[in-house]
Image 1 (spheres, each protein chain N blue to C red):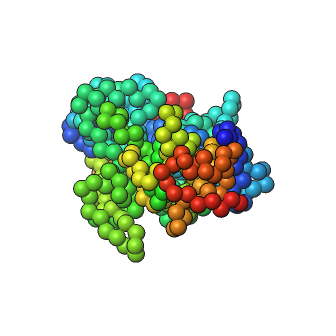
Image 2: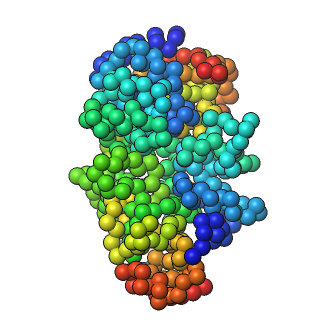
Image 3: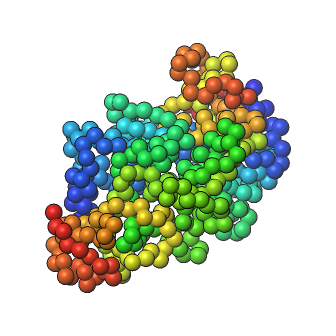
Length: 214
Length: 211
């Protein structure tokens, strides 16, 4: 299966979880395929909002994204985000990074909501339910689920089990679990020792072999 | 007044041997350069790693191995990798001994403002700042005591949007080191200024307990 085939059925208006922290773990080829698929009015959930001309930045440039849920949109070269945001073409839901991760984890783990101390008493908790537990303030946060997750891993075996490379792991494992359809691009296929599996194949629906140089 | 490098040295000297530490983006990153080689301090980076080594150069650059500032780094013996939810659980769960952050403002109660200038046209970006503020056992702030136009950054109340409430334990500045305690702000070290002159710069009542 090639990258375009793997994402071709993405419906307009989908929520897409996109892995990566900066360049590490960013599934660039799958994002390009999503662009080629023509899907639009997307809600993108990712740590960053893209930089330069590739990946999420290209999706924004081509006006395919109506809303982005992220922790850190502002980057050195995030001009496409900046432009769309300032023009009012792109809704931003800013979420503290740990809350973003835990909400995605909760989405894949069947949790209805959870109380987190992060953000308590700040403007990012305005309008949210709060509770004081053992003298400490917490904010109620809800899970995030995706229609589609795009993830980059290092290696897959033929059962869809995954391992990642170094800090390229970041959001991959939790996003893979939180989407209806999870598409993974890998650098290589091969055997994986069951003791070393990071993402079990139950969370993986489609795998695209991209290779290392890409 | 002391320079940035001396300040980084001062913070590094206060980090206990063997501690698990997160250094924020910017000035706090420089603390790593001053940790004693035998200190066995383990650096955490929010994007899923313990045992982070110095910045990578040349052939050592690997784009799968970056720090929170997205700069290529190296791994040290004993390093480990984990996903984002685990990385922040580690933080919120109180497993990190110290985190060192920059700040726009700190209040006398230890409230921290370091993520948003409050300017209406600014594009907001929070990253892991709010999680770091509430999670580590001790939060050290490193900053200049005054803004470029001479306004104090240690205040009775922060005027910028808050990152966390009552979370800062110490404030290291170019002019003095402050401890935020139950009984108010205590000056631990003076960096070439007299206590009375320092007090005259700030609207926060200070107590002097020099180490």
